Structures are given as C-alpha cells and as structure tokens.
Length: 224
View 1 (cartoon, rainbow, N blue to C red):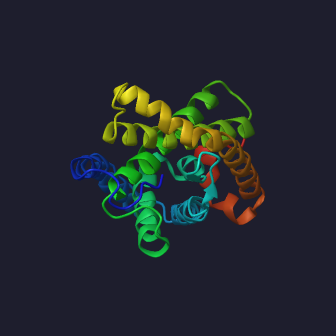
View 2 (view 1 turned 120 degrees about the vertical axis):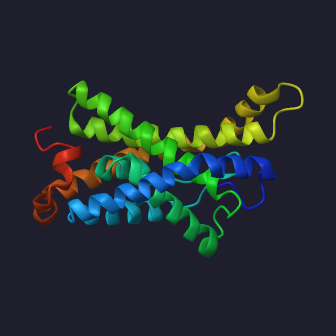
C-alpha cells in the first residue's frame, strides 16, 4: 500500500480490480441508502472519508527501504460500517493516485481491495468480537484499528507475493520477504493508529453535536 502504477502484471491488476468492484458498488449503494433513510449519517461518512484521506496520505520512511503509512479505515468501519469504506477508500485512492502520485490507476483495484475491503472488514470483525467480550470501548477501538491496519499490509504482501513469487521458495518465500519490508515499520504505525482512533472516538463522544446525531450509539455504544 500503495502499490505503484504499472507495478503489477496486467492479469493481476485486472483480477484485483474485478475482486474489488463488487464491494465498491455495494458500498456506494449502502452509502446512498443510509443518506436517504438517515441523513445524519452523512456526517459520519464525511468524517470517515476525510480521516482516511489524511492518514493514508502520510508517507513515512521504512527501515527496509520502502515506505509505510496508517490507513484510517478501521475507525471508518466503526463509525459507518465496513461496507461504505470500500467506496470511500476507492475515491481516496483515486484522488491520491491522480494528485499525489500515491499508487496508480492500474493498481487501484488491488489497493482498494487491501485498504478498502480487507482492512475495514477485519477491523469491524475485531470490533464486534471485542464488544461481545464486553471489553472497554477504548480497547475495542484500539484493537480494531490496529489489526485492521496490519491486515491491509498483510494483504498487500500477499498481492505482491502472488505477482512475484520467489524463484526458489515460491509464494511463501516471497511473502516472507514482502512482510519483512512492511511489518518492521507497520507494527508501530498500527499501534499509533489504534491510539489515535481511540482519541478521535473519545473526542466525538464528548461533542454534543455529534452525540445528538446518534452516530456513535449504533457502533461504539454509549454505555461502554
């Protein structure tokens, strides 16, 4: 994340685009339905999109010679659900490819699948499991955001390993190399994203205007 323009073989780029497309279409429909039925959800959708754009635009040097960044999609999945994050991430990645040279158009599908599909669904799943375990809200949000971030980079490592298997050890050998490139830097970034997400949720809960919309009651719960 972001896989740069032209880096993936054409077949892989097409396949990942096809894999991400249904989630983006479904997410767009869900956003439209939520806006019609509950106009107040537009606030959460806008905040989630802005949060993802800002965090994922931060390029931080990696000790392995690449670069890494937080994603913001874990918090978005908590606020508006994992479905809308597919279309929001696709829009964010498209603007970043065109305006910031982060990622590319041919790799938009692969980047959307890792950041907009896998990351949010993992984050939302972790969040739901933590709620069932009745963990404190701060722990729920932290684990969801941090593990969603790591899931994004694990998916990207798998995408690259599938495209460029190691000549000797194949997919697994290549996966280990790509994970080594990303994970050394990404683990502390995921922790930082988890902490930041907790701070954002706590700030939103203290804001009377946000509280009045019911944005956090459905997802985070006011009694946690």
